[in-house]
Length: 549
Image (spheres, rainbow, N blue to C red):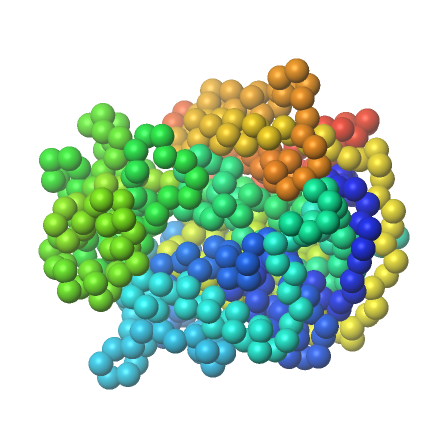
C-alpha cells in the first residue's frame, strides 16, 4: 500500500545521522552502542528520559542457557512449547544459541547480575522453563540494572540523545527507502512543532502498546507508537492478536487504570503459590507445572477460577518465604506491595491478569529488517517469530539484546551512506486526529471486548466502537495527546481485526466461542498491512496474507 499518513505538520528543523534509533530500552541502546563503536554517527530518540522505557520495569530477569547441565536446545524446546506452534524455529534457534554470549557481552558493558556463593551467576526459574536459567540483578530489579549499565555506556560513548521526543512518522526518499523520522520534542517550541532526524537507517525499538488497555504493567509511554509508525510507512505487522496478559499483577480495585505493579513470575519460581479466597491451590492438577505453567495457561486458570467463584481476583501466597527472603530476593516487589497497604510477609497478595507484553509487532527477518528498505525493528515492537502465540518468561530482554546485535551487524556490513533527500509527504494521506477524551474510551472498549476473554460478539462490538466517528465529529488538535491517541486507535483496530479473524484459541489468544486450537486452519501467521479509503482519510485494516508457521 505504501505510506498512508503523516500525523504532524511538515518538519521545520532537521539534524542528520548515519543511524537513528527510536527507543532507549535494551534493544535500542544495544543497537546504538554497537553502531557508535564502529564509528557510525548515531542519534537516539526517546519519548521520555533515557532510562524511562519498559526495560527498567523488568523484574524477573533475562533467560539464557548459562547454568550447568542446561543447553540452548533445552531453552529452544521450552520456547517452542510456550509459543504454541507459532514460533519461527530459525528465530528461536538464533535466540538461544547466540543468547549466552550476548549476555556475557552485556556484562562486559557493565551490567552486574546477582551471584551465588561460589561467584557464578545466580539463576532462578520461571513459568514454562524446565531449568533454572533466569539471570537476575538486585533480586527483582534486573531491568533497572541493565538500563543503568547501558545508559552509562551510551553517555560515556558521547552518543547524541534527543529526550522527550515523540517519533511521528517515517521519512522516505523518492525510492521508498527510509530517510529518517519526523518527531516532536515535548516542551520545546510550538505545541505542534515538528522536526526531523535524517538518516538512511531507522531502527524502531519503541517497546509495547499496553496502554491500549485500561490496566497494564507497561509504562505510560507504551502507546504503540512504533507499530503505528511502521503501519503508516507500509510495513507488515504480524501476530498482534497475541497480547500476553501477565497472570500476577497487583490488584488495586475494580476501577484501577493505567500502569499497575507487577508481581514477577520469579516469585512463583521461588515457590509462591496461587490460591483462591479459601486458600485452595487451583493450578495444581490443571498443568504439570502448576503455578509455573506458561503464562497464558496461568492467566486462563486465574480467570476461570475467578468465574467459578465470582471473585474479582485471586491471591499469590508467599508467606512461607519469611521476611528475610522477601527483603533479599524481592525488595522492589515488597516495597511496592507495602506502599499499597499489603504486606506479603504476613498476608497473600491480591492479583489479577493485566496486559503485559505484545508477542506480535512489526514483522522482521532474522536481521531485524522490515519490508521497508532501511527500516529495522527490534525488541517488543518487533515480531521476529521468537515468541509465537505466547512469549516464554524472560525471553523478551534476551530477544531485544540478540536481535539488536544482529541489526547492528547488518547495518555495519555495508559502508555508511549519506541521507537521501526526503520525498514530500502526500497531504491527501493525512489521518484525522482523535479528540483528547478518546484514550479512555479506546481503553474501555479494548478491555471489555479484546481482553483476556474474547468472542466474535465482543470483538464485533469493539470493532464497531473503534470505527465510530467521535461524537459531534470532534477531532483533536495536533499535539502529543492527539498523536498518541491516533497511534492507540490504529493499533487497537488492527488487534481487534486480527483477533476476530483468528477463530481459535491458541497461546494468549483466547476465544470463548472457539475454545480449541485449530492447527489445520490456524497454525499460521496473520500478516496485516494498512490500506486507506480513496480520499485518504480513514485507515482500513485488512489481513494481507497468511503465512505458514
